[in-house]
Image (cartoon, rainbow, N blue to C red; front, side, top):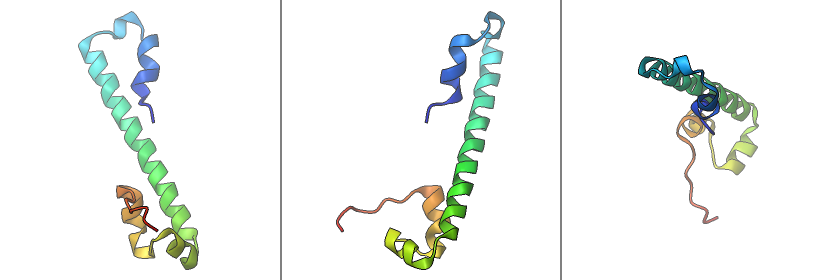
Length: 80
């Protein structure tokens, strides 16, 4: 996912080119990225919690692993 900075920098007015304005924009951009990530994680958790147990088993998850799987990601080997 691209950061918000890559979209806004080419169109920034000249008066925004001061270091303080750049730092402020970077802080707002990081905050927006965190909010978007938090909302995405919340939706993922909700979707997984709505699945029946047999589908979670097919995914290799138990209900107690959902929060960890969403926040940390799942790294499982592809051996079967």
